[in-house]
Image 1 (cartoon, rainbow, N blue to C red):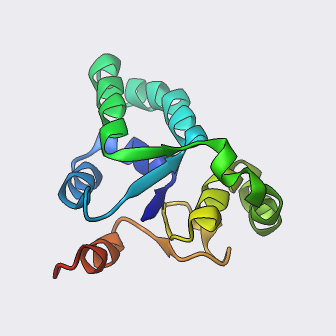
Image 2: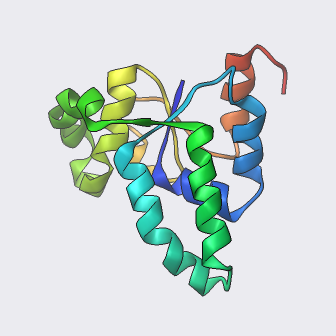
Length: 142
């Protein structure tokens, strides 16, 4: 299991590396994201797409397809970890607590590009290294 931050969902829409990893390892690895991560991606993507002159509709359709690869973690699953997650991350980015709370509730690491998670007490993987974790979890070699 691996909890994804909203920035990973956005990267899956914008590029091929993250989407490729999700497709390659879905099944042996359970990808999860808190409900608010999908909401955050939906809010931020249109602006990013416009800046990069990428058509919005097909990109948003790709985000919708991610639901088949990334399971949504509803708030009731991670809500009991809100206070501890806030204690660990509030000084950095108070809006990121649901990702940390989901990871704590599910006992798994986080995949993010956000350095705010470093030192929060949960293993954190970035895209340039996450395949090491994915391959090991899937019982494969990189």
